[in-house]
Length: 237
Image (tube, rainbow, N blue to C red; front, side, top):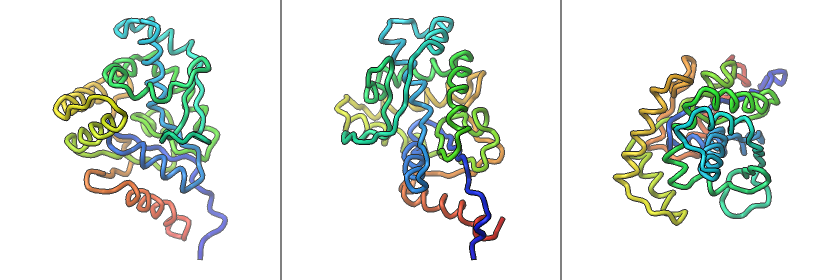
């Protein structure tokens, strides 16, 4: 018999490398739980997009950091939109949701997200979301930096080859030129940058549950996570 006095998990942190499936799992999990889904990567992508649009040199850490502080960014659920988006991102009132997934943003977002000042500003905004509760937050440093006290931390990964295959398919479906070998090289490059950066490097939290999505469909992973959540509710805590 379930213990009805058990408090629901207020915040779920999901981390992992590019194209590991963490965003898809996070979105599906949030839908099942009726939680807010926040893909924090879109925030760094929005700063990157704005820098490119405003012709701010990506290598100018001071200028990019100032832009991160100044940017007027809003993130909404994808209510009413029928173009396959999972959320809506506005910068200065402009819907840039699909602009965030262009190859140019892909090629520059790791450098932008490596800047300490950019990360500090984005983390501040992310924590404001997390403190509201009932949220599934996805990124690269959620369990280690943004919400280290999250009651459930997951680290989702997959082989580089599988992640490159997924990214190639996604780009093709979005109408972009997609060469598997080039994308695999970019995946490996981003892994190196993200895992070796000085500030908030990509790594699993010490108490994170690791999940390899290489040969698992997202729905199966979500079902397994829901089982993890239900076990303590059913008296196994």
